[in-house]
Image 1 (cartoon, chains in turn red, blue):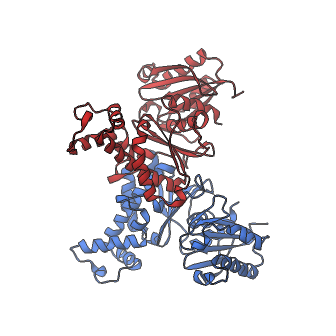
Image 2 (spheres, each protein chain N blue to C red):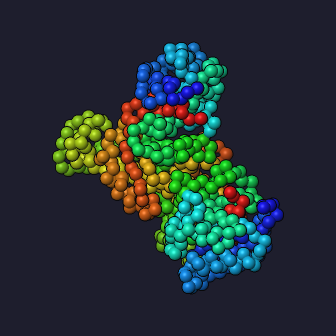
Image 3 (cartoon, helix red, strand yellow):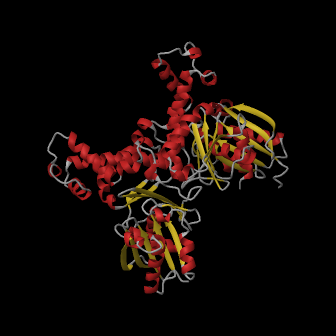
Length: 307
Length: 307
């Protein structure tokens, strides 16, 4: 095996789509396809066998592939063989996915990982930023995902599934994800709009969505900016607690909503500086991840670099 | 070196006392002494040299000792040579303590560690409980300390000082330690007393201290029980967030206030069960640590087992 020249298959499994990319070791996506998760469910033996068969289809299409990385939206066993709790695809709960794949394709090496950790690994191998090999990675999107890379390895915690920051308790004991995941942010904006007495500008009559909100913030809209400031405060609080537990000082933000990072950052930084001591603030780095739309596919492919 | 038969020196450094124990490999404290931190400060070259000299005094007294473990109340460098931020003994900030000790006593191996981590290591080697080699350890006392032992090693995080749970943000963005450290608990009790309309029993006229409060709870005093229930809720919330980050399911509680654990536990468990999913709750173990008063000395001595 020569990982310097071969091509990997990166598979990003989601509740709506399964995305498949043929990726070279420089991180170029050579070919890309997606399958509907629902159509894989229609396999006579259900999603799991539908997925195994789909993997087979692409392995046949790309016979040079020897390593397949798979990012999964949920909890996996510490030995990364079995999917434990995958809320979006319940059929995978407690399924030895690596076993099933290896039985069927014994010449291929499969690398399974949680999708947030996969995105963090993608940044490690394919990112264009100046990250070191130890950092916290936070995905801001429909949900809030997170991962810790420590000395170039995914931090698994004691039992295998560390770094579920989206489920930390925040204000009034809500979980972080409902508070500042996509819907949470839109809820904050709606409340801000209701209580805002000035001119809400383009948000006054708009159908509120994330693109509209980010565009409004880019235009200096006050309600949009106040919304992202609130998000920054809440996210900053969670980061303070996480830094105290992990002692990490390099933090990257990925996911679609990281596009709003310039608007989130000022309040987030202020909160972090308010609650962390000098030791933690020295050399603290808070930056947007370098991989954007393709982070899922590239992250899955980058798993092939890991042992 | 035969770690099976030799005696270790365990030194527990605190703001008031430096405690020194000669400890055998079974965890018996053979001899014990304590020095006042203030008197070590009176050394012509200040605390640091006073400490080095004091270590020398005991090494001379116990010439068989080859390993010395030192527990320190603050942040230490990742390579465990240098004390970084020791709030109670500012002289130690940025001091290469291991270097100074090794220069003076080249035949001795010194093991430095944060004191909460040392207590957790003590439980690992000298505890009488049925702990595995991976667990979260929380010290309830004047402050709130914590440590993670993972595969028999202290988890250091990225830069060396992980596990400062006492500084996590909790309700209204207070840090956990002021909320439920010793003084925080007494504050909760005072507020409960003020707003309590029934008979506060033995707490009505008592000078409120931790012993009085624990004794009252043991007698079924309602205000005391409500106080510890509140502590349990706050502690439970912090544990929920910590478990989501570390995926740990074995948790021990040490420190003086762990004596109140039976009163803290019910509300703590309720909170934890409210916010964690089935995966985290299966086999979740919440228990009092087996080492009590001597945990500091034994923890420091147990560091000598580590590499």
